[in-house]
Length: 324
Image (cartoon, rainbow, N blue to C red; front, top):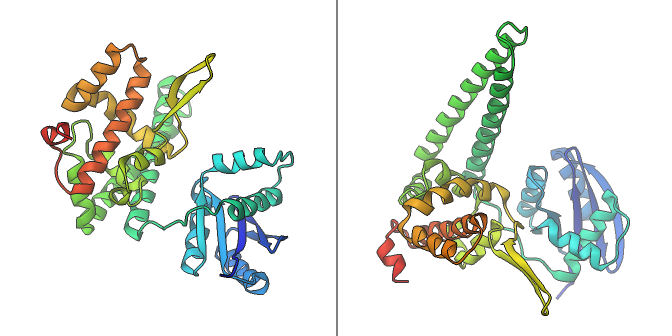
């Protein structure tokens, strides 16, 4: 079997660095982070890659999404890697230099050494849903900031009118995005059905259900609920060594922060209204667990329940779940 050529990509907003590792030799080039830059990258790969390309980049936000999709559609094997893994690999190499070109080469060596799993792009309807949800969250955050500024200003202040105008504009944007979300679910009956199933879980409402579907691609297709929790960074991290180190167990937080933020308040609600999680939380509190640790555990269990109703395609049933 032919050894693949490894492509490490370090992504920034306006450009990306590419390092091509082939037969122990590394070649580097920088490209614009744009469709024109993607075309230039493909030309470069055709010229220098001597075998099938395994490309990898860090999961660091939206700047690499278009490039990852473009490479996948061109037939490359693509891996999207948690930055914590790349950082640990750099530490294992005792790497002290950090530049974009060095980071791209590091990602290429990581890919050659550890052969990370291939990334499967979310379907178009899920990508569109995520874009709408994240934009709505961003506009809500802007509105909250402007509202706070308005409360601090004197009514006669010269900028008060500007703040009120901006708030009105943001309210209009929120209404438009909410309308677009409703239209999106109406056009996607399968997504709408999944949201309905999630809303049968006490503690999960329409907003949380929408965010879970937006942020966790292929949610019901994960092999296990624990893997979904790991994706969200909700698995526990233990610190114990010998007889002297007994650190407090905490959430790993190595995963999708959007999911964790979406589940925090629903978990607090579920501790009082979800029959299974109410009992679960009470047991942990009675055992002396800190309240925030209990909330984190409930967040994880709530995500397990979300996975369960989607995996089986049935509404939440506390008696059935309690029996399992």
